[in-house]
Length: 556
Image 1 (cartoon, rainbow, N blue to C red):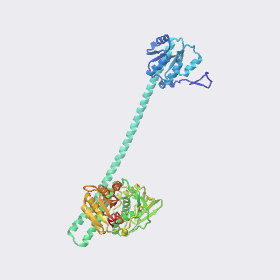
Image 2: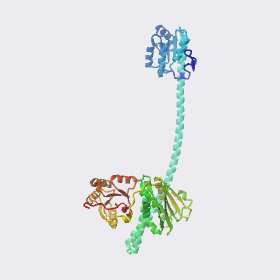
Image 3: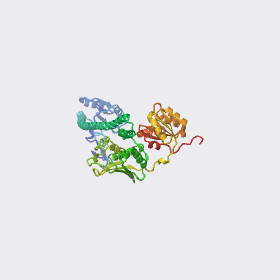
Image 4: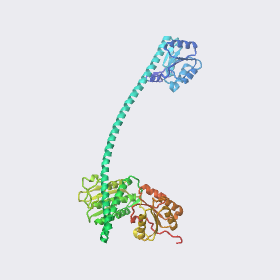
């Protein structure tokens, strides 16, 4: 509510408290009475005594302000004309305090209700005016109204708080009910997922047991045959069987390990697809030869960003899948095209993919009927391929016209902005390198050494980390293959010690380990290794890891 003021102009406004603003009053219990005349204080005290309220009597505006600093009041009765600080000035200072902005003030004046005084009083926040001499019953009635207003305001505020509390309780109950309902739904969904996972686990274990027993049975029988047979033809056939079944077991182990590997990070670097596809073909060479399959891989050179080990696994898995489902003397083609992304296609003219299987071909544990040689697999490889491709920021899709019409797998990978370091061809690699091979497994150590010696290199072997350090420091070879899990010092400690002793004269250090995650390779590089190979390694991988030329010898 606003009233026009005649003090300045009709457009000036005097702010008067509205009923809504009164809802904030009543924070105190006592009544403050301010009057410079002691007789007036006694008269007010007598008039209000029947109300049963405690009165605080003061004789100046300064003393009134001091009492307001000590506590709050339900009502202030304030004389207008006082020496020093008038009632209007006192009221203005009271209203300046935030906590007293809504405390009711009743002015008492002896100025016969002059309009200007009344307007000034309302302007500084007065609620009502009484003109002296004040009749006790009128004063008492007005004060009673303000006290009743105070009490009703408190009751209303309490009801508001109670209602708010009830509403909050209802809301909390509704939220709790919805939360319980959601938890029940999620729990039911999770239980269904666990039940499905348990069924899939049982299926997987049954498949795994079958796939492991087949090669183990063949290996067991091969050992029995070798024990009683001595002719070269039978021995050669058994050797081929052992090689084939050991390769099957290796692939099963790799499939199982890849389930966890595919969830880890990648070691990203520019990678040559010529190198990747060449390595994948080498891994599948025996399977290709056994089926007399022709492979067309005459593709343009292209480079992608990725993890070379994982990329080799991707294309080896796709090649093995094509080999498994392609008849003898069939054809497999690998096509590469490079634009903003690199597209690699693996195409075969084999049995194709049934229409009902095509939408689920990348799901885990999805297996078609066993191939001609009985190798069914765990139903994991294409799921792993898809996961590893996506980790590289790429995509994969499968297509087939149906049974007997072949299949096609297209992979898109990010193109590398610049080519990687070129891999030296086999013809350009030197022979006669001096190499140290360290592995605590005697059979692995001696077989790797024998393989490298067959390639024309001079090899020294060591079974412990300390022995490897001595051999490397004393002989200063061109390269050293170090197992990471050694019985005394691990391979990381060996690499750091060799770097510390030889500095720039250290040989090329190659880590060889059964741990093949991206973090393992990063740790190996940080420890001082130049390369990291994952067991089981092929001859091609060992040769590719060697330096391109011998190190200069002292005095050369």
